[in-house]
Every structure is written in structure tokens, then in C-alpha cells.
Image (cartoon, rainbow, N blue to C red; front, side):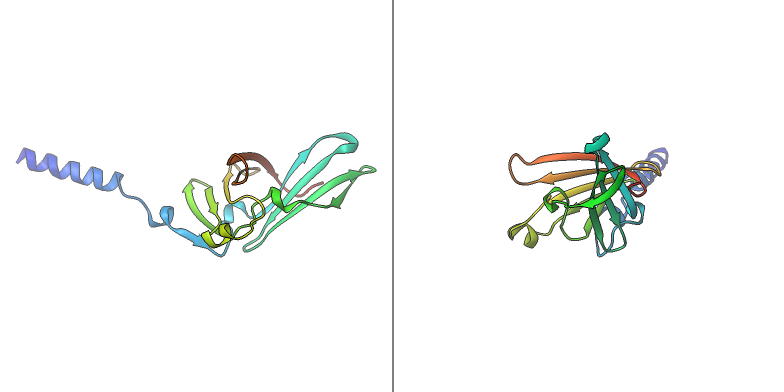
Amino acid sequence: MRKMWLLLVLATTFGLAGGTTANASAWHHGSFPKAVRGYWHMYMGKGTSALAMQYHYTKSVQDTDMYGKVNGRWKNGPFNPSNSYNGSIRYKVIGHHKYYFKATKKENNKWYLGADRMVLTRRGHHKLTMKLHFKEGQHKWLKLTYYAGRVK
């Protein structure tokens, strides 16, 4: 009787602890996660050569802008799309507020501009970490940190 009780307790424990949710392993399509939606910015440099990069995530669009400081005011400038993720909105949840974006095979086979993979991690209310993977060259990951809000 004691062995049966022990087997029942072990089976129940491993059954509950070993289970995963379907949400964590499924690919999601068509919209950015709610945790990363909104405006995110990063300042680069100070003084007269100051630059800023701003991302705006909505439900279905990622909008990227580059700003330069001219006479003390931020002006919209040219942006090189090769420094961002331009693939489809297709992601997996890989952790708490951590999302893995990957372009489809069809997108990778054509002439492709920018990163082929991206990991977005929301760190608190005001910080977002973006890791971009570039297949050209040495297959490097580039890690950037963005802060909540627009360029001011």
C-alpha cells in the first residue's frame, strides 16, 4: 500500500511540474505582443552630433525612425532599414515578456535586408532589450537597449 501511495504522489508531482502550456510553444502570427507595443527610443551620442532611434510598435506595424539634433531640436532623418528586423510578425513566447521573432523560410531565401531573427525582452515598465541576428558575415547577435516613450 505504501508503494502505491508513493507512486501516486510521484506521478502527480511530475505530471504537474513537467507540463507546459500550449501558448509557450506555439507560433503566433499577425500582431506584436501587447507587452512591447508603444514607443521605444535609444539615444546615441551627445551634443551637436546626437542621434536617436525610435521604434513604434502597434498591433500590426513596426515603425522605425532616426532622429538627429539640429540647433537644439530633434529632426527626422534618413534611416537604413538594414539595421532592423523587417521580417514577418511571427513569434514564439520563450519566457516571461520574452519573444523570439524569426522570418519564414520563404523570406530568408529571397534577397533579404536586415536581421533574420530578433529577440525582444521587456524589462520592467520602462526598458526593452532588443537582440538582432544578422546572417551576413559572422552570424552575430547585436544587443540594444531601448527606453519607453518618444524622442524628446
